[in-house]
Image 1: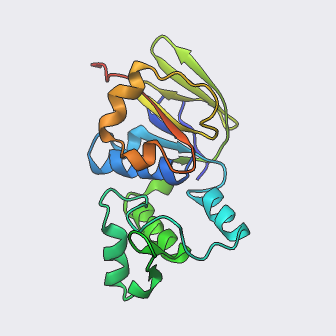
Image 2 (image 1 turned 180 degrees about the vertical axis):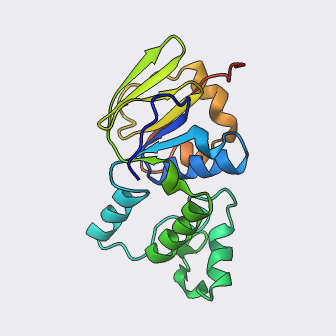
Length: 199
């Protein structure tokens, strides 16, 4: 979908990868935002960059256990596999829980994207700048600006770089699972959340 909405006050995910999709699902499921208030800015498609990387390295099964996925219920991927007779795609590990195959992981993720109609909120563009305005944040994209009064979130690729967390990050932490906020591959998910003002 190709869209921007310069008049909308949206909560914006910069990137439609695992973290962006997970938080979009969590926000919608908890009724913290309406679908019309949410945007996911990603030029490739939801989870497409992650899918491509898995394909390029020939990943057949994940190293992470089945509780690590884009849903909010830790056991929903296992229930998804059981409901479809695909328990054999949960590979036993020598340590810890079973690990899903890549195909099972992505089909489960796609089912959640469809359930919450996430493709309809995707802006097909790249983010070029983030400008702080007195009444919110304007996220500049290759397809026009998207305004955000309430908040946005983005993933920082290299956690080794210095980064200062602001009070908006900590106030939003109550609905971010630890595995999404600080992943094992050294990425930090930064959430900027503004207190919703009365309109």
